[in-house]
Image (cartoon, rainbow, N blue to C red):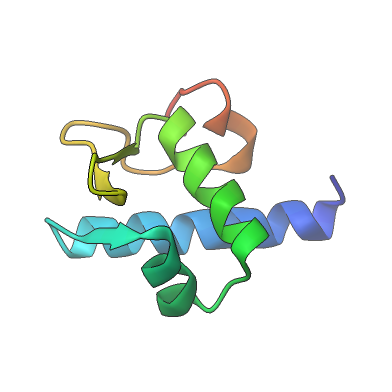
Length: 86
């Protein structure tokens, strides 16, 4: 992954985490997340997967993504696959 892409990904992860932290109870489908953050389908799926793996988000039965209570408060691409908070 290029340094520029890595930086952009970290910025996107930071923005999304921030919005979930600012709005307790935020619940979005992948399509809603794509529209809200203005990102393409592939990038949205990638970011949501990283946040799931890090334990920041959980995927509900109604196909929404919600914040895990007590989960990490910040996630970077470097630790998303390990599930460790940054």
